[in-house]
Amino acid sequence: MDLFSRKVVGWDIHDHESSELAAMPMEKACLREGIAGRPLILHSDNGSPMKGASLLATLERLGVMTSYSRPRVSNDNAYAESLFRTCKYRPDYPHYGFADLGKAGVWVQTFIQWYNFQHKHSGLKFVTPVERHNGIAEEIMCRRRRVYSKAKAAHPERWRGKTRNWDLPDQVWLNPETEQIELKQVA
Image 1 (spheres, rainbow, N blue to C red):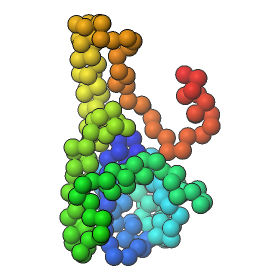
Image 2: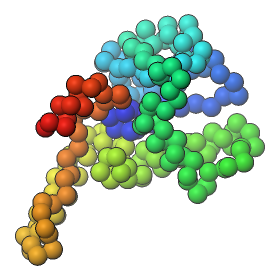
Image 3: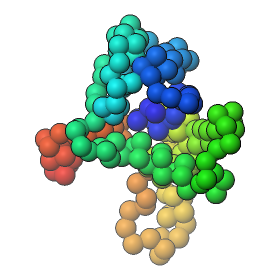
């Protein structure tokens, strides 16, 4: 997942874990998204597939740095946890499992298509991950600002203060340092 846009850029399903299998979707995502050579960090858990030689060699070749979860902290990636919750609370989520890998793949493909292209993400002020990823979210935010300004001008009695803030952040941090949090609170 691209944390900035929340777009799921790569996924795969297998019946077991391995470093080799973990490397494949990463390589495909980098090629598909055209991000080879750009500064990129892959944050993952501390599992052996994520620290295995095959994945690490692939990441090094692609110029991707690694970051790992803090020891004994399973929920340090709020973005991934949010994606998992959205997935699990879909009405069509198969709570009793999948019949086979093929059916699991079809369900995940359908979910990712919906999530990336249709899901109006609350953390993105109700634009889709693809709209944010492709850079058209700002145009949508400008249109929303105009609509709210016109509505306030036409009926000022309905507004007690400012209109809704439609600004999206320029940067996203997984686990901000204390100084970053303090700066944000001062601003």
